[in-house]
Image (cartoon, rainbow, N blue to C red; front, side, top):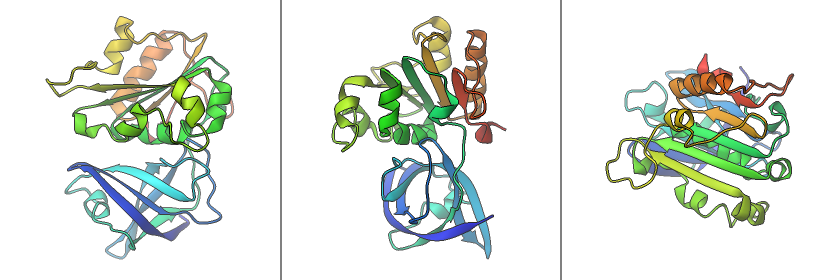
Length: 250
């Protein structure tokens, strides 16, 4: 696998189990909003890489990533210790199915994610093309604890300070968060699958388009629900009414 060494620029620890970081973007590195890339470190003299969705918008001069911390994980037990000035491995070729060209035209776009599945949505909602194609964009992020709501401040502010989409996002972007394991949470606490099943999160295959990213269980269960409602899975070769990242599902 082709990869290159890139410099770590910044790190941010959201809580004991979640952190994000930025690296220098090679001049030749190009990607499409929603894609992922292989990322990692040299461990015991061998490259250890995992797939990470790109948080950054396509126009940014840096690349940002969001990662969980697994204390005994083969990669993250080392990765979360990186600091500015260190080098990590970046794959040469980004890929993935969570891109706008895999969806048919529609009115509303629903970006449904759990945990670090929020990462590709952060890239997509800062892409001017998404506001040209859809009248309304909703980021639906479900986590276990309140402190897991990464980028919450930016999302609650509807990206108002973004240099390219701030004006559009303020009026057309909706942030819908849910926390499932916190008794003091005053917002919606149910799983997204439950909300869809009960009609509390209404979806219509005629007008709505859906992207899924997050836990394997959520993706499979929500995908099956969407299929039962008449949604059709899309891909680059045959756009549909919903997409999921097959590389993360297996």
